[in-house]
Amino acid sequence: MTDPANNPAPKAGIPARLHASPLSAGMVVPFVTLAHTDRTRPIWGKLDPDRVQKAFKDRLCQICGDPLGDPFVVYIRPYDFRTGVAVEAGLHPECGQYSTAVCPMLAGAMDRHNPNPLTEFRRCDDPACTCALWRAAERDAGDPVREGTPAEAWYEASISLADYKIVTNPSDQHDAPAVGISLRPPTRIGRLRKIRDAAPAPDSERHIDPLAMTMAVREFFGLGEHH
Ligand SMILES: [Zn+2]
Ligand SMILES: [Zn+2]
Image 1 (tube, rainbow, N blue to C red):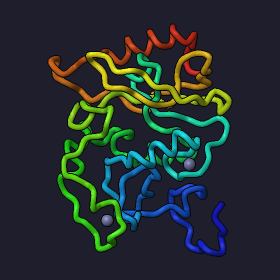
Image 2 (image 1 turned 120 degrees about the horizontal axis):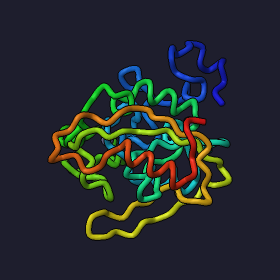
Image 3 (image 1 turned 120 degrees about the vertical axis):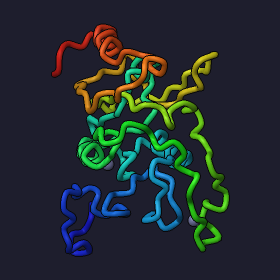
């Protein structure tokens, strides 16, 4: 928790849990976002693989970096339903609420992922900063098609901390290996709600029908309508 005495200025729209988090352009820099040692200098849209791994392993919130509570939430696409793995780290519900309010992807304000987040960055003056190792146009492992593809539908799923389990899907000829939080039974999804619709895509780029997939998944998990 943040000591209010150290933080006299209230930050409008930012939940108390995130008041100690670094800010860039008035927005909280998520724990898992790639950034210089000075974390007020993030590479928006780019994940730090070491921080993602730590969040999964230590059950941390991907926004504030603190341990998750019970229940926590995950943000998932229809594809994640199908493979049974939530590939993004969990969140506190209030950190999720904040991120859906400010994240252009989840809020539906941008219809394409940033095609190449690392094409533009400047190395900083700290010799210990990992930016010395960054390379332009590097892709996130296990997510080869996401950048530059049409934005997909996103759902928020609420999961009990008792069901927290990290699983790995082996790669096949179509999909890269996926590591993340299990969505398969016995994991119970307490609440499922749509955060945003998929962006319109030409037929040639449309690989799945999100609605059909969601209905199939609801059937798979024995989920009724919103609850
Ligand atoms: Zn740096
Ligand atoms: Zn959090």
